Image (cartoon, rainbow, N blue to C red; front, top):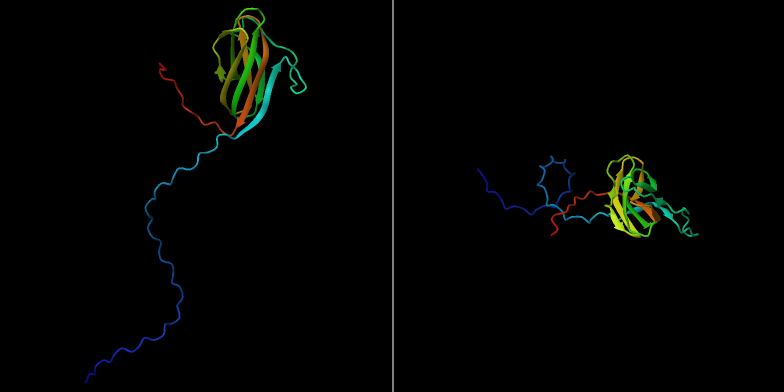
Length: 188
């Protein structure tokens, strides 16, 4: 004879927690997340000065000791430029800036031209067209990457003898030069 099942009794106290189980297998790779926001722009202003300047000036003072002779650019040198300032630079990236003040030796206006060039490189860093004037200041500049140490020269020429009143070539050593593509369109 079979008896009836009785009512369920009260639940007993909870037992002690058992040890943790083994790690399960690694799951599938999730989907790629959204792209983050753009970061802050990098610094392009970190500049270390390598050479203050090479300076040729007629005014020699205690605060500005320079070469005490005035250089003369010979006449007929528009196509055979004469070196005025030379700098020897180590390898690296540089921003160059040059200024030169020229004055005629004759009481007439003259033609002048200058260029900034690296030794053993065919193209100049910067070159000016022939400029017609009396006393004038010419400025040149450019960015330059040197794989090996090299000499940079500021050279000028004139159609008649002229005096170099002041010439300065500055080279700033920079962390890097980012190439930029520039161009001119019809500017009408």
